[in-house]
Length: 462
Image (cartoon, rainbow, N blue to C red):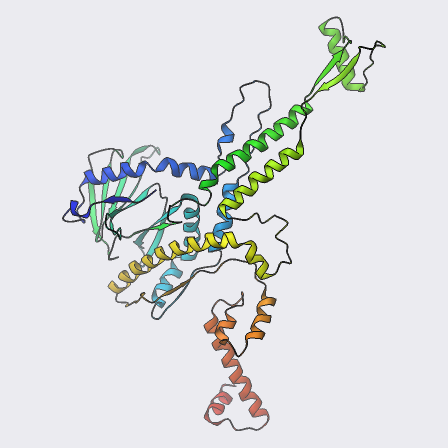
């Protein structure tokens, strides 16, 4: 699912877009919606097996869903985005404060989930309506928003569009709001339906983001979800498990075959005999050699079914690069290095996701910095360092042993940063140094050693 592309030379002014072009772009975007609907259905556990009907009446029709799709997404998102994204750089305190006010940490987690499910996530930026407005990101369902880019190598944004239903007092759909975002304006339209050629303009208003305030994040180069290529395997697993339970039910409801035996001369007498059979669990057979009774059952090979089940399950995890954490290989006492080897596939997946995620984050920083400059706050985001930390069970004992080994070989700040319970290594290192200075001053006073001016200051602080 690639972005919608238009030739930049088609219009002399991309702040004034003809309704015909908007309508054509919406129609092109709507072609991708069925795929996104399907991916969401798999994540929510609405798999095709639930609609399966058996041709033969009376046979069991169990429809089991083993939701590997949700498992893959939740594990991948938790591993990559379980810890908040960290930003480091000079003069970005204003942006970090805006991020804190807008709870960007929770927003990023939801964005990562969209990326894992749909392969793409789209943010819309707006100014809050309170007394002290600030820029804030909104995560929009990718089925209701799209970005149009030019046909150059850079694929620079031309405009974006967000549409949603207009409903009356009885909650019936009576039209659609269509908001078009250009580099300098937001244009509001009302249409009867998304295929309509008549666009009623409701108004325009400027924005100050210095670019189209919609950013498209990619999950990977192909813009595919994390479980999208495993859908056929997920379907096969559901069918296998459903039929496995069906076979068990048919085994319980087996038919009793009688040879050389009569249960009665008529239906009433046969029914009475069957009831006695169920009550006393005893069947008396004639003395003739041909008399026999046996169950008609299907021979089930549980070992073969289990081998196939394990093979399909392993393929799902292998090709999705998301391990089965309930596997016996993930022992609780595994060392940090051993755990990393077992998570090698997931780490490769995380590296790809991180690369594209950071690209979108940098665009977000640029647009937010543009708004803050308009508000008189100079922010330079050109040298901001973005760090994404994997959410792994931490072995702080191993980290402490490593720190003791590398002391005097690596900076204290770097060593402190290896501890999972330290969020800000620079601040923590500063606190440690200050505590050392106070401890040295205290020791000097106790033993009567002069410390100079610095010692006097520390003494006054005490």
